[in-house]
Amino acid sequence: MPAVFARFAVMIVALSVSATNPPVLMGTWRSAPEETPLSTAFDESVWGKNAQAIRIVEMTVKPTGDATLTVTRKVVDRCR
Image 1 (cartoon, one colour):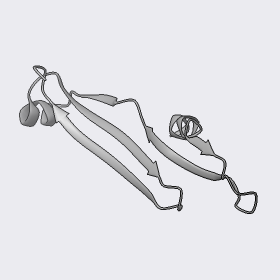
Image 2 (cartoon, one colour):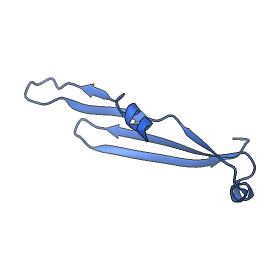
Image 3 (cartoon, rainbow, N blue to C red):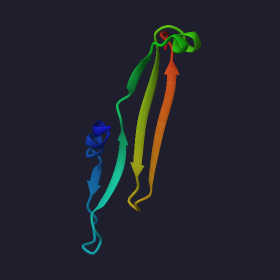
C-alpha cells in the first residue's frame, strides 16, 4: 500500500488563475499492474497452471474536487 501513496504524489497540481482561489489538486493517476501468481491447487483447478491475478488502480480528480477511484481486477492464463 505505501507504493500507492508514493505514486499519488505524481498527480498534477494546477494553480488557479485567480488570486482568490486556492491551488487545485487535479489529474489522473494509474498504478503499475500488480501481478500475483495463482499457484494453489484450487487456483490451478479453476484457472489452469501459471495463471495470474492482475490489479490496476486508477484515480481521476477534477478541478471541482470530484474524484473517481477505479480498481480493475482480472485473471489471465499463461497464454494471455
